[in-house]
Length: 278
Image (cartoon, rainbow, N blue to C red; front, top):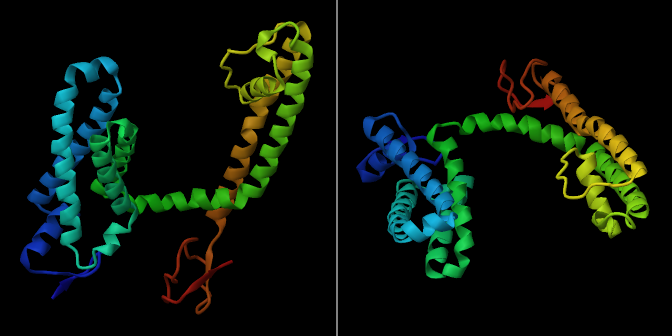
């Protein structure tokens, strides 16, 4: 007898089934406790990565962090092993997105401990935060992101043309500002530096590290900043328009002609046959 799941068929007997129910589900008190412990371990691990980057904290509590890292590392290794051992087709987990994330974080943990000069790899452990989606069973809701990805895919030609236009404008304005400002302002000592200023200005970021000093240069800056507010809205409008088109789109059933299927539907909600987009 078998129990069907996204991780393939698992026998409903033995320790594998018990571990499977605890790790992959939270329909029991033990399963909920495991998810709570796992969530705390992820949050503590993430907090430690951030605290280790503070020199004063690292000097004071470096040894404590090291011991705690080993403890958490062994916990995540055991959890990874149990996830593989408790399913029939372990490759379905190993090559899934979360399986790859788990493996990368474990590998980076050992590399950073064995080779201290590779300690920058601890940043990979921040990927564990993505597992919160799995703990809270939010993965199905990630499918909603497909609408945004599809809208971006449909808009990429227009966005590329828009970015090319902005690049050309930044080069022209930056070159003009170099001619106007280079003799009066150290911030515009080269054309690339002037183009950097133009990009920062047109995107309304405004770091303030480079600023014009001549009256005509300031006038151009004002014009560029005012244009920047309108320019920022262009790609947003392109993507939003495509999102609206996707919401209005439906899928048509080849068999019964039902036009009211969801845009991402593969089968008709009326007759169960394959559907095609209108």
